[in-house]
Image (cartoon, rainbow, N blue to C red; front, side, top):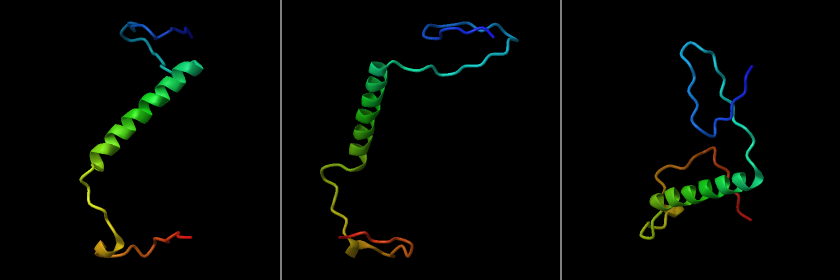
Amino acid sequence: MEWQNLSTDYEIPCGVNSVVAPSELAEQEWEEERASWARFSLQMLSYAYGDDEPEYTTDRLIEENPEYEEKRQ
C-alpha cells in the first residue's frame, strides 16, 4: 500500500482502490481545532437562547416526564 500526504490536493486515478484515513494532528493543531469547535458551538447556542428568551419554570409545564428524576440538593 502506498501512503500519500493529503494536506495538499491529490488526484486518485479512476479504477484505483483507495483508503483515506485521518492522521494525528500536532498538539497545537488539535488545540486550535478544539477551540474552533468550541467557538462554533457557543455561537450556535446563542441563536437558540437569545437575551430576550423568557425564563422557563416548572409551572409552565403541560405534562411532566415520569422518567425524569429531579436532582436537587
